[in-house]
Length: 323
Length: 289
Image 1 (cartoon, rainbow over the protein chains, first blue to last red):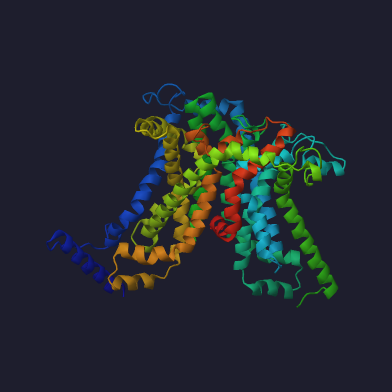
Image 2 (cartoon, chains in turn cyan, orange):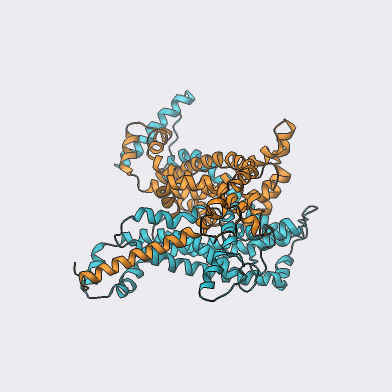
């Protein structure tokens, strides 16, 4: 079948070439790199590849070069004198260290809590409930909203005197807390708001994972006399490894990019005190302070952080044949 | 059936389940509901944040003011999001076709480069991107030279930027879809004499309609919601997409300003909310791929 096809495609192409060129141009191409399909596939993937490649990899390379210069906002980068000075400066900079710590805290707390919340909600939704679609739609809705929009809602929720959060806690005799204004609390408040926004996403991913597990396994575990909780912990959760991995990669990358939310909380390049992360620090250094080379170096370090997360993930997906 | 609990125990468990699910609805909806209620109160503090206004305390003034203030931004966001969404989906579909349906060696490494592009933190490319549009290809200034308003040209740069960085995710979405296509169908078409282009136009594209729905909805939401690129490439001013003026409300306003702030948030989010309500299924499929 395959050989027949190859012969067919060859003769077909030959015929076409003969037509366009007016002569009998027979190019015998075997299954090397330059196969017929390779040539005919070029017009499809090459233009998007060039655009994307320049925008992503070209820009990262350029950014790396900039990070080795002493480029400031006004003036041009001097590429003749390259060194790692900006990186050295970063590691001696307390602001950078604080932002790095906050980035890790946000990344870990946000990802873990989102996964746990998403899994729990997914298990609840998976109990053959009525109105499943409606509920799922409601739980996922915050994710369709812009960080800029949700930041406005949460500024009001966290408002010290009149916000709903403090009003709620007041019922239990707690607070009122200054959620956004207190550097010790703001990161936790941000993480909570982001969990509100993204746990629906984790739920959708887990729900797809739960649906892929054969029903017999649930039933077999029930017959064994396992209590519901034990059954989920022992039988079901281990099978959700794939869902956990892909959800956590996406969530971690979201956490690295949480710039939009933090910017919108303060409406400026300076996020609320105590919530500065690398993403906000980089943009501030570049477009507010004007220290472009330093910002480029922070950008490269963010890229490396993302790479540490995605490289194992892509390898894993590739091995499983998911790509 | 083989439940160890009696039927009353099961009933209570069911009721408990629905109570928890309802509590979750309250949790996920509360910030929006509070916002909505606050946006229609003449005085934000007249009743508790989540309660509707007193009968005589209703006002539409926050909504009209917010709509007036953000109207320009909404138009800009539409000018930006519609073409950028369509272009990135189309390019993603083409790339996925060339890398999936057509079969050649070394296509997996190329694909890996596409997919890795999804996860790039934009901070790693921000300075080159802004420098590119400001110095090397200032579309705004080119446009101004031939009579097109500068902000429209700048918006053009933002469109291209969103297309470029949207290609990876669009490619992946179409790739997962095309991977499950029946090979025999394609081969049969070839045997019938269809060219590579013919197969794409007459077989793949018509079959891609459901995936186009998913991709278009996902991309539209992403591009509409973005702040970072809008801020850096266009910035505040005449061409600013709606997220830019909304973000700059910031924390500066006092409680009295929360009415207009909440109304503004809804005005800016309305297109994405409408798209989500109409196409929630497709959105869920887009995010979970």
